[in-house]
Length: 383
Image (cartoon, rainbow, N blue to C red; front, side, top):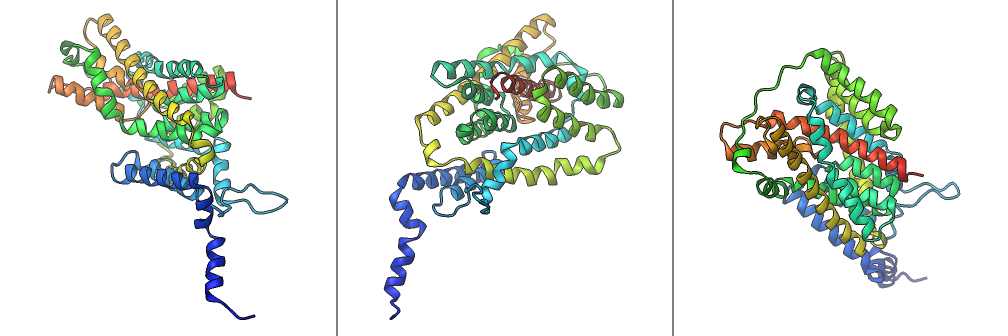
């Protein structure tokens, strides 16, 4: 048979991904979405450490004919992205990320002022507000719970809950959570100024008491014991968070703490981002529900900020004007970004203000609070 270059080229093109894209242009739309997210992560630096892998995961998942998402069938080899996603499916990646967060976090400010737990709890208002609004909009209870967790400003927690309760909505929930976390310096300050007076923002807080080494060692052990016994479904997140913190504070596991903070956390972040992105295929992502989730996520962030600041005002009154209500906005879980926003706003009102360490108490309390809320939803709606 005579070889024809033209026929060979036509055969290659007919069986290529370009031909498949022409048949289903929705995949092309998702590829363009991935380009936009890559621009936001690289060009605008919106949570780039996770948004860039998520965006590239979306890109890979929407290339047709690759088989990267194929589950194993009759002894066949699974696709690479399917294998990666098992770490999300079984709550491995979010839990390891929490191990790293625990190793990076100093719980000293929370131990020094235990009342910060109340500010962290108040800042979970956005979770339950978004949950109720999602129910009103017609989402099933489990999906509404996963959407509500966006208000905790905690990406790994949102991913874990979504993977268990609303896997089809996982990409929209994760992208909303991390995008709004990156926008905290834009979202929070107008609300903080609106809800407080200049006099309240000017309050200069007294230095926190020193926290002993023993207290820092006992704290993660005690929190893990009490919280997990109370709500067992919090074990993957709270357990790893407190283990990471214990590695940091006990003084005999510096190498493990360093690995958890850096190498291990960075490796898992790559797999986590790719795994989340690979679920963003056209059939489930290009829907009106995605737009609703993006809007509900913004509402959740705003209500969480409002809840924290309003309770901060209550503590301002009860303390006789000794607590600056701005630290209440740090009750969302975005560590340490939310605490830095409190510091910046405090210094704008009073250049002598140094609120960062005071705000870190509610900030780390918010991490615990969002994990507890996640455990509650998993207990109520989990299979």
